[in-house]
Each structure stands twice: as C-alpha cells, then as structure tokens.
Image (tube, one colour):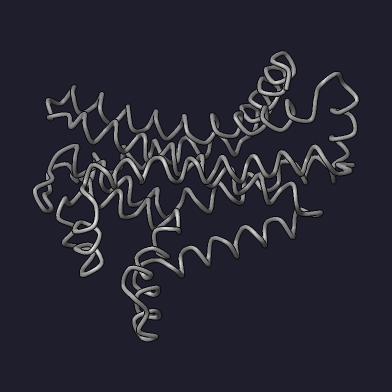
Length: 277
C-alpha cells in the first residue's frame, strides 16, 4: 500500500461523502437527538445513581447500540460492490493506485464519516453541559467514546468483508441484514434460554455469548452504567465472578476492534487476489 494512493482515495471518498445528503441527515439526526434529550429534561432524571450528563450519555449509548450496527452494515456493504456495478471500479483502478490503497482508503474514509458525527454529538453534549453548569463525567465520556469507536470499527470491517465477497448490492444488503438479525437474536436472553434448555455448561453459554460483538458492546455499556450489572440478571454475576470490571471494559474495546480488523484484512486479501471487475 502506498501512502499517496491511500491518501488520495481517502480524500476522494471523504469529499464524495460530504457532498451527499445522507451524511448530513445522519449527522443532524444524532445532533438533534442530543438536543432533544436536553430539552426533554432527561438530565434531571436519575437511574441507578446516574443523573445529569451521565444519564444522557447512557441513554445515547443505548440508542447507538440499536441503530449504529445496522446503519454501518447497510451503508458500508454497498461501497466495493456498488463501485463494481456502477463501473467506477474499472476507472479508479486504471489510475496509479494499488488495490490495498484503494481498499484501506475507502475503509478509513467510511470510519471517519460514521464515527466523527457521533463524537461531535457526544462532545457537543459535554460542552453544553459545562455551559449550564452540569458535572461532566469525563471517565464515562472517554470510555463510551472508545466503545463507540470499537463498535463502528468492528461492523465496518464486517461490512467491507461482505462488500468484497458479494456480487450485487441487493445480495450485500440482504446478507448484512441477516447477519444483524443473527447477532440480535443471539443476545443474552435468547442465547441463555436455548442453551440452558439443552443443559449446556454455563462456561460455554457465556463464552458463546461473548463471541457476539453486539453482546460485548451491550455488556460493556452496562458495566459502565451499572457496575454490579443488576439489570442483566444471572449472567452478569457470572461475568463479574470470572473477570474484574476493568478487564471486561478493556475486552469490550479490544475484542470488537480486533474482530473488525480481522474481517477487514480478510476482505482486503480477497480483494487483491480476485478479478475485481
């Protein structure tokens, strides 16, 4: 991968994204949601000891857990396969740009376009909280920002992997939706119910559950939100008995990041070694 080719594709994809209405609608959606939470008085409510900005950040993370994974998948799976169908790929690869530069340039451009609006909305909430004299939970801010980055990176890698392996945008979107449904279906309640019915060892139940990046993100948010994980039931106690809170938070950031990189690397390997036209 050449630095010049990577930066050229990165700038090109960023400029293209900034010219689309979808990017600004996406940005305004999350910025407006934060504004609405302030207007609705959610910072004045309290839940399990969280009040003010901490309460707002927790609610924001719960919304992101539902929306961001499917948004990232549906958006990203069109990138490579869409360029093929629109005959953009043939033109782009006629330029002095390597396959890896093209792939990773688009990858990190998508990451910036998806993650920066979330971070700006987060930071905007903190700035407004400081203006109206609310206590700023900086530990929650940095940890939640890291969790969001890890989740975006993870599903971005999966989306790029799908985009390389599929031959049409319709099939890519369908595949992304099916994967998202599987991950949602195997959240803790359904997973535990199925495995306990089959009387599988609890270690296996929790272990399989922790392979699900959506589950890891959910538990990571709850660990920060509710250190005793009282909202999760028996599985939470098992997790805290196995590892410490700090170890699990580190795992919730590192594991999705590595998983996303693995899928992105496999996608890049496939992209370089096949007929992309």
